[in-house]
Image (cartoon, rainbow, N blue to C red):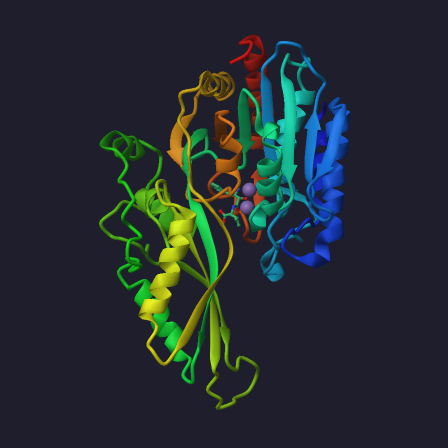
Length: 430
Ligand code: BES
Ligand code: MN
Ligand code: MN
């Protein structure tokens, strides 16, 4: 298929503002699901269904069947994060625009562009002998509840010889990656009621001190340091802390536990973040009220061996313990996910490595991810190896203004996955 046509098709997908967290966009999420379903039918899937939700359905697809061939389940998400602040975008988030070989739009890299890449790689080949299955969801960006429930109810949906997830990036241009861990997430609101609300600020600083250490009792207990071999391998990655600060973060200094490398802080240590604080008088002008209540939206990233349920209990206990007696403090959990840990010993990882090598001249490096994909532990629960990879670049600005996907990454990606499907088909059942 020619590139102009591919670009037009991807642009049509990106133009749909499928922001899953905002109810005003429910119709748009539905339209994005329809777009995916239509693509799956064009790929020859005989069984295409909407599962689990009226508003943000999981799109399921299967077929055509190839007797005796390996089964590959493809996971992705058609929902996107809200585009604000709109004023920061050079061109509007839902009007995809190419500048300097980069396609700018919300969802270009996370994850519509990558779903598009996986699907077009099937259309690009003489059809490989692979039994394709698809689970493309519309709630990844706020916790994947619909897909969690679906997998619990119908575990046979994740039966496969391998599961392919392309929702991540290379570690650097020219350096494709396969990920061994994802961090988990616990998202909560902490509310304090008293007659003096600076108590909320004090409570938050008791939970995380200036040195970056989180003072929640028991939190670091199960956290293991990466092995010497793994830490040594990270030193060989094309990652410079200075470049990370100046080019990626564009700030004046890096925070966190100074004893550990930045990669270790990002990939192998838990966090406590404050996303927003509500309370009191914030309108124009001045008012000398002392508000009775204030709320902070916070989240914690979890690393392998930590359990969401335990961390939720620990956070709640810490809030109760750090709040003075004359304050009533409460915690409400909004969503969460366990961390994921993936062993790279299945033969399918070699095939992906080989596909990248053939197309780019460099295979996959093992890396860890700082982000989360809540449903990955559930996808892995059926025993299939989950291949976590992606065609993005570290500076794609996911969730931020001016998100982009480099077109070279897309064209290479289509070639890479086309090759991977062929190798998988040739290998027979892996
Ligand atoms: N694709 C990202 C996750 C990601 C990005 C993993 C980069 C590794 C590297 C995904 O869409 C995402 O944004 N996940 C959210 C979690 C969700 C529950 C809000 C995240 O990590 O903040
Ligand atoms: Mn994503
Ligand atoms: Mn995302």
